Length: 320
Figure 1 (cartoon, one colour):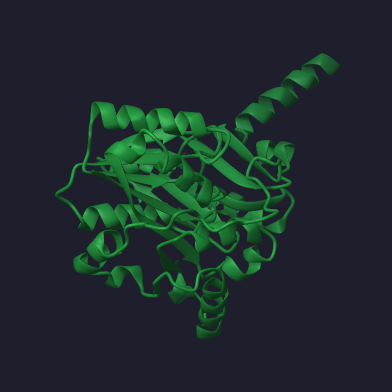
Figure 2 (figure 1 turned 90 degrees about the vertical axis):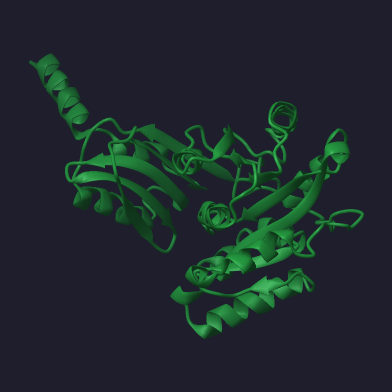
């Protein structure tokens, strides 16, 4: 039977980073990754593809609802064409895990696949703040997990970690909770997280009444190709400016940008942003997801400054 692992977690929790670590330290199997992007421009898929993994990407919607048929079709194609040992599924950060599980428990997957690990990543740095606003998404992802893995616990104080633990325990009293610096994971531990006694045997997912759907219009995205170079300092200033709220509530951002002093991958959440140098030039693009995004403001922030100057010159010429 093909093992099916779902690595869920809210926006920016660290799902892709965890998958990279998991697969890097747990080699020897034929593994295919299914990457689900809410926006039009995929970023995480290319990150994983650059690592050399077999990767299928489903974008412009969540596999739990809008892209459910595309998800089912993609899984069937993987099973038919590759029949790997394991399929690792990374849904969007606003996906409904119980709906994904329902899809996996239907024919034809029950004949060829077994749901293995349902791991939910919990972002200690942002969980308490975001859970008050987006509780329905957290509750479903946490309640249906077979294991909960805390991320960024070293970036917060002990009180925050303890409050986060108490909150997730109320939502899922039984799943093991892992609170540990990810750099300290051993290969044996990672193997145990996905191949311990985690086979999912419940008859159905816990009911989440009156929840919002990820397609109810609460979240929006902004994507843009970046075909010009800017300095690393300019890139950092643009990312820092997203925290002032002028462009809406940006919950998650990621992208590739070519700068005058090298190419960078960036990742940002409500709390911070990080830049990672890349070895070679990239196809520049950015993608953001949030609530009440100011599309015009984001477009102005990321538009080529030379393009704006040309437009101003044209307008000045018309005035003459």
